[in-house]
Image (cartoon, rainbow, N blue to C red; front, side, top):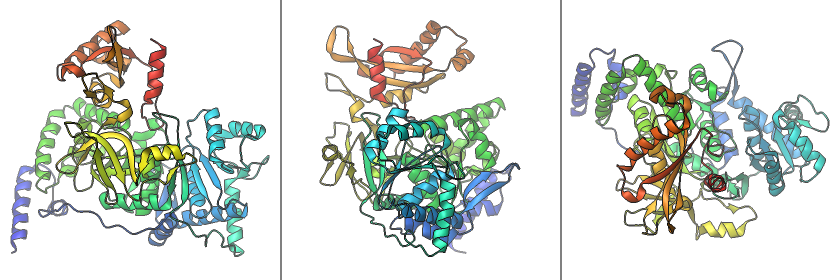
Length: 611
């Protein structure tokens, strides 16, 4: 018997002794145990552009489900296979070219649905430039972006019928084609997406190959994506197929999905994080996509679709984790679970991973299949990140911007560091500029995923890109192991007159841990007797029901007093210059983007207006 086999048998024996009361068989342990596990990268299929990607996926995964839908029968689903998806893309793209839209800009706006994904791929895989629009924009801003982008056609759901009708009447845009995702046939000058697909199939059957044979320039703009505008007016980011394809291959080297996975699409598809990681990446890997029916249905959707992976933001994960742990506590099993978490965590560090067996009952509460959570947009609570990982659900944080296609770094299947946003992707170079005494500085990146520039805004482009290096506007540091940690946006840093820098996001994370606090906005305000220096203030959004349940108080004054006592406890854990000296409390949610980032400049305007 080899030494490796002998060592493995010894470890297996010890594990079975430790968990003798659990139903663990040799086969389970053999699968989970690799005493010689090494940190590495996954291999990935090379793709040149999204047309190449979807053609490869259809060839490899053919009749496997690309999209899943509920039917009237519980537990049964309608599916759209990879072959069907490709056929629909080719048909719609063929008809769009037939309508004179080759090389033109075409917009999409709707909730997450199959028709959105289909339109996106039909546009970018041979027709023209796709322009995803924020589904939550007010009418005037939506019209402004349509004008700025110069789109000549738009796909939209019935929710936008009225605004589209108004835009048609005003004739302020370049729009020639209004395409409804919901109509079955053309009505009152509005085209039907379904009908265009049928017409496209007819054209292909007659030998039209203009879309099928269309060549894609991988280096030029094929995607125009408007930034969320958390610190300034939104800019139109120009991305190429090379940008997106490179990012997909980078993701594939660190996080594995395959045809056995089903991903729940929750974040809005117009946002590049969800679009690249939650839509294009699963299709690249042969996975299935199920669209969430709404935030109130998430728990049921996870169970019904047997979801294995999710891409989302901290607010959702933290809510799921809190509910999960409260459920365990109500069953009187919290101490037992916490004890087992410590033990299984120790074992996993030496290559023995039995977490999903030990915590099977807990994981069954989340559908039983959930294995991967990817967090983006803002920092995830370290407690929640560690908690999910300890339960056997790989939970990683990613970091990126629209301008970087979007992901720059992420935790991997092989290594994570709680609190960090992982290691920089293989194709990306990163440097920290203007470091302070703690090694914190501005994050610059360079590589094939960096945008082409801002559309019709050379000045803004030159302000952030110098000799290929893109200034992210974020501050952070890299530790000795190579993990990247974020500290906050440069524009939101509070600089005191003694030269000390305070990162609001860091303090907000701590305050948000207070039971009953939903979210926080930390800012600097001039001291009453010192107009030069600033005092640290916090606007805190509380949950009235939770506050009443935990602290048994109801009036605003009582609630403020309770929260202020908690703030004073937090102050004791921080250096004096970071002390929070003033708070305001409210039940009204902070102003945020569709991916739940605080619009800091809008919040600051609101505060200044009310003081």
